Length: 343
Ligand SMILES: Nc1nc2c(ncn2[C@@H]2O[C@H](COP(=O)(O)OP(=O)(O)OP(=O)(O)O)[C@@H](O)[C@H]2O)c(=O)[nH]1
Ligand SMILES: [Mg+2]
Image (cartoon, rainbow, N blue to C red; front, side):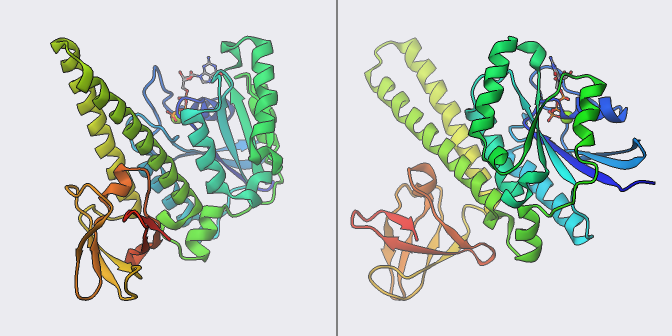
């Protein structure tokens, strides 16, 4: 028997990961139809490939329609952590991308960013970018996109190869063959969690995800401001009702995103956190995160320090740097305008 090969298939939802496993490994996993995400856990398929025992790990994509990105990252991180603890590293990763996605923005860009932080630059040489859905795009446009993709992705600069997959067995097996004989490497998230003892929220991928969610929150906040402006000037009852409904939907989305940030940090919004080193004193103070508090300002000075409220960071345009994740110790300093930012 030749050397074993284990490859994880990652990438956004609906990019064709499961289809690839079914094709090259003759598996019979469920593939998606329509816009709904399909694979919601990591599914493993073992088969013989040209004499090599191959394991393909079909990983659910970020931007899943049924699970939050935080849940997906937790699933992936738990799996990779456990594998690494057992002394197992991946031979490589295939990252799936639809060439029919016309720009690398929004969810496609978020997926790429997360993926790159999960891998770390050292593992980029073990990555293959697999482009799919060539049949859905004009050939010249798709080729141009592929060239642009090559120049835009740091994973490609770092040694990742990029492939065109045309949904045939030949192209799938050509791509898989590249992983045969590759030296398995730990991914950054494995080194961070297992070797450095970091919590998920402290890893590069965790911090990237927090950054992505906070950016979405900022965007929602801007949308909310514009909606409120429209409501203030609207004179028509039916359009006012529509605006109110939009406002409520946006409020729900903001709550959802905030809950995601909380879950990533492994904490609840009402948790008491320690705040060290205010500007006025060097003593520590505690801060209660309350959904009702609206501003990141001093709430109530106390003998030992100051009580701060942190809610506004998540709603507003700044955020907290969670420093020692497990103990939830954050360092804050007071700004001249009495707003706070993390150090
Ligand atoms: N037109 C076209 N459709 C494709 C291609 N590859 C996959 N599909 C279709 O895209 C849909 C989604 O494919 P899946 O393999 O389930 O995608 P996935 O990446 O596993 O998605 P999740 O499990 O949701 O993360 C299915 O209906 C496939 O038949 C392709 O190259 N061209
Ligand atoms: Mg799938």
